[in-house]
Each structure stands twice: as structure tokens, then as C-alpha cells.
Image 1 (tube, helix red, strand yellow):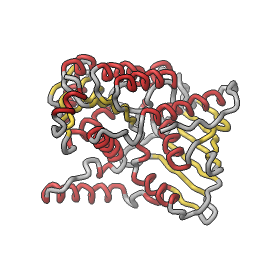
Image 2 (cartoon, rainbow, N blue to C red):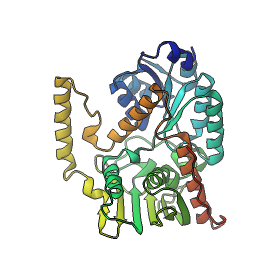
Image 3 (tube, rainbow, N blue to C red):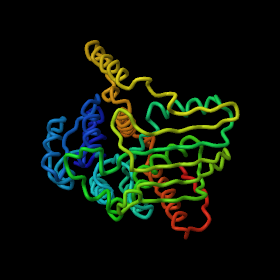
Image 4 (cartoon, helix red, strand yellow):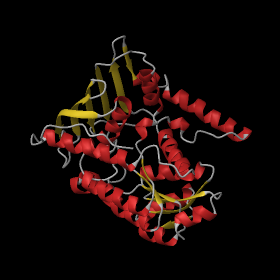
Length: 366
């Protein structure tokens, strides 16, 4: 039964959700959805048997070994696309064929051309498209933007942002071999600039408005087939803020500590996102877990990933998407937003290759 018909007659029912891909981030989405009131995780799909077992343990009612069979067999309102980037377009097209809304993991696509094809298919089918750009939901970065919007440091002539992690290779000791696709530029669309840069571009435009790229460099410090370090110089056209961005996949990282920092050099002072982090992550995690226990006992709504601090952002992003489609509204982070980040990535790659024409700011019309 097509999703739009089911909604018309059964609008009070829970949102029926399928999860396509149950790797690390797909599991976060599945557990998040399973914990949401008014959401029924009816099925999950993954080609890896261990991931299907994990999906069952995490609350999926049924599991499939391929996403196309899931979409064809189940009655759904929406799907989470947590597959590798080279499968995003096909998954969105399959969902559009049956009128099912999509929440797509970043990067939205591997190129603007691919993104345009996905958006055209979605528009023709009348489905809504959301993208998991979670830095907008990360607590420290939200508070930093709030302080900036409140004028705490006045005009900001310069800002800097750093996002570094351990990428697809993981932090030693590595028990299982990493998947091959993140190191394949054709499958992933690029390296750290694609994997991490899209998040950063989305946050910076959300904060400062349209960006223009002035220069960029990329490097492979670990001698892998894709870049694992990128530095980009940008300018915010509305505020005149010069911005330096560095992202890389060469540094060990372990939750709950994450190497993301934004620093604003304002007229009246300096603020940075680290000011809004917990003084002690582990103490904060313990307090959050205790608060969740109290919430469950008293009938309140717990912060499912509150103890992890950062993963709560994925829960909140998915929850906002679900509420938007339940209300028949446009998701807060759209497919067009996802496409815009790819446009900036491609422009940066062009500058890094020293064969890109002068960049122009392109605004996304809502």
C-alpha cells in the first residue's frame, strides 16, 4: 500500500519506518527510532548477517538481506537511508517508486549531478527528503550559534572550524577489517572533505549564511587513495566573515570525546564551542544516565543518547524529520541543503586541483 494513501486514512497510526543499512550509524538511527514515541521500526535491511542480527537485537520487527525487497514487501511511511553513498541514489529512487519519504545519511550523494537526479525523482513522486546533518543538533555547536546570534561577541571578522577523526581505519586495536568503500573515491565520492566537510559546510552556512570558497588544499598524510586532510578558506558573503576550515581523518578518536571545535574571533571578544562542552564527559554521562532512569520511573521522556553527548544529535535530527513528515511539513534539513554542501565540496576540490573558475555564491531557494 502506498504511503500517501495509508497516511490519508490512517493518519493517527505510528510512523512506520524502515532502516536501510545497519552499520555503525544505521544502528544509531534504528535504536533512536525504536525509542521514539509514535514510531514503529517495522523492518531493517543489511547485506551482512551480523548486522541483521544486530538489527533484530536493536528492535527491528523484521530483517531483510537487501533493501529493495524490504521496500517492496513492507507498508512504510519513511525509510532511513544509512547505506554507503554509492547506493543512496538507487535507494531514494526505490522509495520514491512507492511514495515513501526518505531520511538520508550524509553525504546526501556523491556529486551534485547525482543529488539533482535524486531531488528530481523525489519531487516527481511527491516525497519529502531529509538529510542527517547533525552538527546543527550537536549541543555545544547549537549553544555557540545561540551565543553568536545573541551578539555576545558582536561582529565576527574571523572564524575557524576543525573537525578531525580516525576515519574508516578506526582507532587501534582494530578487531575487524574496515569496509573497502570509504577508501574508494568512486564509491564514497571523496575523502575527508566529502565525509566531514559536508557537515562543516552545513553548519557554517547555517550560522553565517551563504559561503564563497576562496581557496582549498587537500593531502593524503596516510598514503590512502582518498584525501585524509583538507583545508579550505571561505568568506561569508552576508557578514564578511573570513573562515578557515580544516577537516581530516588521521587522528585517533573515541567517544564521548570528539575533536570538533569552532572558534569565533569577534569585535568584543572570542568564543569557542569547547566552552559549552561538559567539564567532565564521564561525570556528565553518569548524570545523564541517572536522569534517564528517573524519567522512565516518572513517565518522562529520556534522552536516549544523552549519556554519549554527541550521538544524541542523531536522535534529535531523526526526531525532527519524523515530526515534519507526520505534520505534512518540509523537513528542517532538506535534500537541497544536502546538495548545497556537495556544491561546496566540488568547488573546494576544484580549487585544490587548481583548475576551478572563480567561485560564486549560490543560495538555495526554500
